[in-house]
Image (cartoon, rainbow, N blue to C red):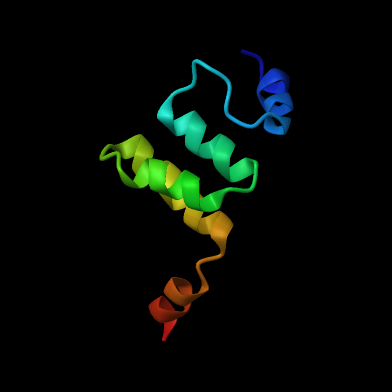
Amino acid sequence: MKLQDYLSSLKDSSPPEPSSLYLKALWREKSGDWQAAHKIVQEIEDPLAAWVHAYLHRREGDQGTRLSLWT
């Protein structure tokens, strides 16, 4: 699947198939459902899921965590 096709799928009600769990999580976040995206990657324990999880928290703007690191 080409990137443009993937991005066009954001108007659909679910991610295109076949998609990996990582792509499904990113699709959910991009389509505005951060909670669903977070739930998907939180249940996977591998380095790529950890990367996507970190990305989601950066997109969320995890203010509480960021402030607690510097105070």
